[in-house]
Image 1 (tube, rainbow, N blue to C red):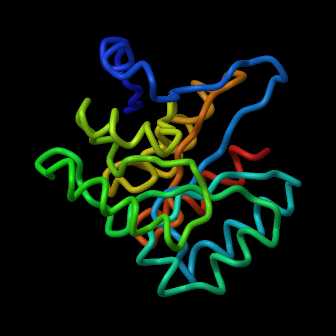
Image 2 (cartoon, rainbow, N blue to C red):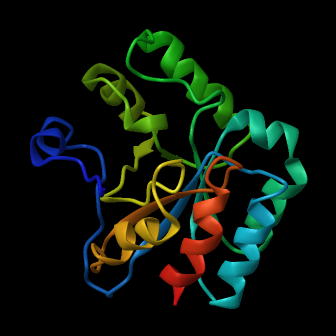
Image 3 (cartoon, rainbow, N blue to C red):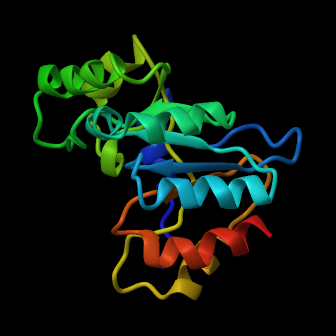
Length: 189
């Protein structure tokens, strides 16, 4: 099962970036939830094999725990973004707590790019974060984290919907690695 945000959600959050202009025929691969010492180096190696660059939306607590892995992402020429410090869920969190979690991560992650965990963010949280950061969403969710999705289904979720300007989400996490290790090389091909 493929998921893309419905148009009414995109209209509710017009300041969030859901895809990019298709001008140069590029697609944009992103990874959430890292860095992870078991998965991120493998991802970096696959990207290198295909001469591909990506954006890694990192958790502040993981950057703090694995600074050498974070450093490798940057050294290899990839972009980084802020995925909050603690993977906070926007729904149910106060605006103050939510923004503070991103600001805490910003002390560790040198980027003005932000992606809300789970894509869960309220209009007020988005408005406040947008004053400081550029909010990046996605239009292709690989669902690599799903325990019920097959590895081939993960590939189909991405490849079937590829188009210039698409922003794809994978996860460099232990939870996602089964599907990711199968899907990423096939998507890069």
